[in-house]
Image (cartoon, rainbow, N blue to C red; front, side, top):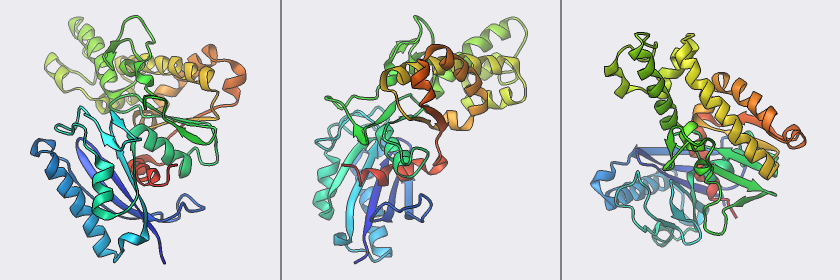
Length: 328
């Protein structure tokens, strides 16, 4: 009997439901993902609305593919934290209004009679890169989100590490400087310097100074543009040679190097995989990060570690949700 897996990716903007093969293929590009259905979350419509949409998407995939529940080996659920993966409960993610102590694992198991597992998005992405992407074949892996926020998923000695309180990998809370952009509620934190929000804070503060001097940067021609800044605009300006945008990425890159040095010294990983902004803007960030990393990290540990962008790119979230179905 042919076997399948189901992935459920719950986000504040979009949700996706995926049907995959029932076992991990020998090759990462072996057509593992069979079908996908996605929809806008619309959290303002309430929890039950989103749950009903998720159920409808799962039902449609099973019906269209003529798959019975007993052919599905597991359901993997990826969702932003905080959550309790052992109890299978989504606690109260800031981008999912009304999702307070939602027993998502029990809800799906009771409806479909299929074992389900839950992990936060950073852990799920770590599993995906480990099983299908850049970290395939490694036993000690760190995945850094570097997106809206900065979090880590940890694979240590070939197993996902969650920590005693399910809080392992909250690297965004580490303070890198006494002052700086605010992230994770802390000025000068890893997330403050190395996230989409942090980049914009840096860009805005430098742009204000240049505008006051009558030297508007390419990404912000006037004060009115300050409120519409985004990381993509700043990156495009840096790629065109704008010195102010380049300065933003220099500061971000150097602090990325500081954070990486802490992780290399502490965990001695084989590979650190970085997603989202780093994957898109590696050429702007890596020269600065590498220089600091070489200066700050223990050389023996650094020589054993590779730092690479995500190999799964725009499909990372899809593989992440399905990977949780196979987590131990």
